[in-house]
Amino acid sequence: MNPSDILKRIDRIGSLGTLPAVAEKINEAVAQDTCTPAVLAGIIEKDASLSAKVLKLANSSFYGLSRRVDTITRAITVLGFNLVRDTALTVSVHRMFSQQAGGINVEGLWLHSLACGVAAKDVLSFQQGSGGHEAFLGGVLHDIGVLLISRLVPDKISELYSGRHTIADVLATERKCIGTTHAEVGAYASEQWHFPASLVEMIRCHHQPRSARLSPRTAAAVFVGNEIAKALQLGTSISFFVSEIEPEVWGVLGITAADMHRLVKTVHSDFETARDLFAG
Picture 1 (cartoon, helix red, strand yellow):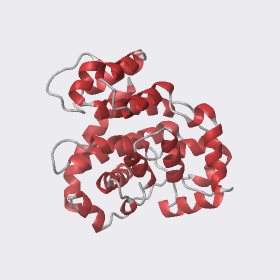
Picture 2: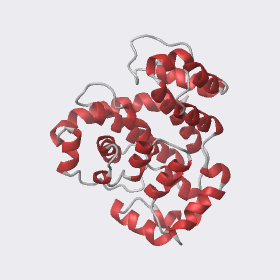
Picture 3: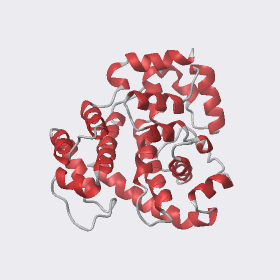
């Protein structure tokens, strides 16, 4: 298959290759300099389910707020535009994962993606004690290309994603079968969705963090988060093999392999919290 063929299919595929409408509107609004808390709140509040989920997340221990927020406008004021956008987009992505896709364990892939996001956030905030949320959405979205490929070429899935091969072998098989990789498909779709360039880079470089130029630290966090999620067997990954983390990656993050024991305990706890939040 020509590499451009599957990308053209994303353009033509309709709902399979697009975000929910409310997510697109949120993304477009936050990108505008004229966007106000009231404007963004108005978009979110039109979706009652989304509003409830955003408030539930905002008031959870996941974000560590010291006071309760009871309106979307207040959540935006306290958390900021970008964090509320990322929260709303995460909820929207979860909806995409709730739709059945041929040949893959969608729920398992969602849990793996959520675990990667949680781990990436915890990795990035390990030294500074807070923050790290910029890596969370990148982790949640890192394998969005797998979800799209499973809907575009369902007949190829058993050949592509058995889970029994190293990620290098998976990428080689993807290139052989469809002419591109899930990382490239995910990055391409994210560009079509007008995601920030740094987020597109996280998705494109989640197996090759040293290639990242815009935000190498967050890309490294997503890479390590992915490996932690696999090591802890949280969800279902396209490769069960844990990749070696190179010294340069540890250096970019400012942590060491010796820190992993404490970090892994934090990830386990935070993942259970996040899973419960999205379960309802």
